[in-house]
Length: 418
Ligand SMILES: [Zn+2]
Image (cartoon, rainbow, N blue to C red; front, side, top):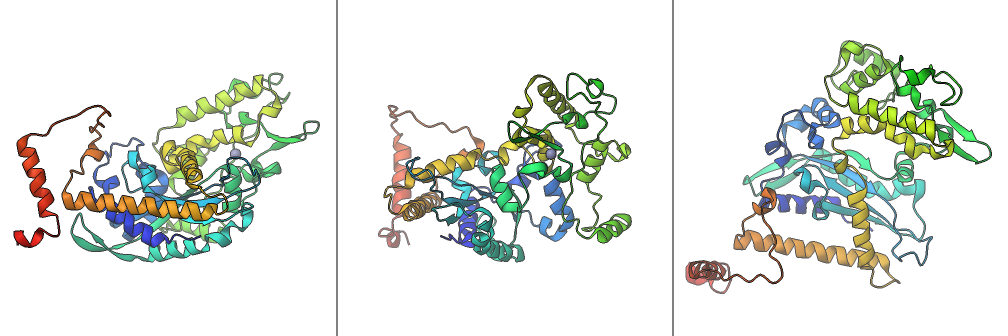
């Protein structure tokens, strides 16, 4: 079931145009070098550097895609799975990016089984919409009262680890289970437990760290290995990458900030290390993992424990964790579950309820823009809801104003004002 992405985006532009526009990530953000928004991340800056014409229009959309399965039948039919595909937009202030109102449902992949690796076939209509958006779409900005060409880019996908395997086509099991370390994962198979575990986190410690020489506390070896350098981007054409780096061709060069970070982590060319925070957090994290290795049985170290070693890198690449984790989407799935009233037609129920909710949102926005309720409250966050029992009586002047406002906005009365 496809919910066209371009109509969603048009609606989003309408929503945000009533507030302070949809470039608040640029106009309202404090630019003091602290990590507050994905706009402070390396990926965002990389996009700006690679496509300067895209970056010059701050209203252009930066999107994230998320997908996960859920069972609409509250566990009664455990093998049943629906996969909504959701888009979230980072043009908003951090406290609004992950609000349900601004997360858009673009696809609802039907059950009864999960799509697995065939998910790319289901994603085709969405990919076409996104490609169209990349080339530009004429929009009207009611906040700035002008027409402009809107473009959009998909920055990253947000999913759990099994879904990451489906979306990216990477191997997520076995000896190369880590999608960042790949063949440097160094997984071990526990023969009796019949499971793969990933240990050897001492590789991420500095070369002279005492833990590297402690044999008996770990696996009876001195650790001489170095942390693997993750592959960045499409490095299929090695020659192009090499020439690009040597000539420093914009867009071709692999000598970006994150590569320098990885080199510094390996201990090579440390003088090129960019001045970004996070080194202390990373070393604390690795040390904690090594201490866990000392005290916990090997069966504890599945791939999920190993992935925490890449957390700091993730934050540098994508910004604050709360803007690219699964929780908001998981909560949204719970809402979808609530939409199912008729178990015979779960997709129909979800689609109907979703469209109805969207229509109500649209009406509320229309009311606000015509009747003129202040929009600033939701940005300044100093508005508080009234408790159920609080009754307030407006002053006579307020009542008179409200009455006049109502009359001015009522179609039948409008001719009398003109
Ligand atoms: Zn890894």
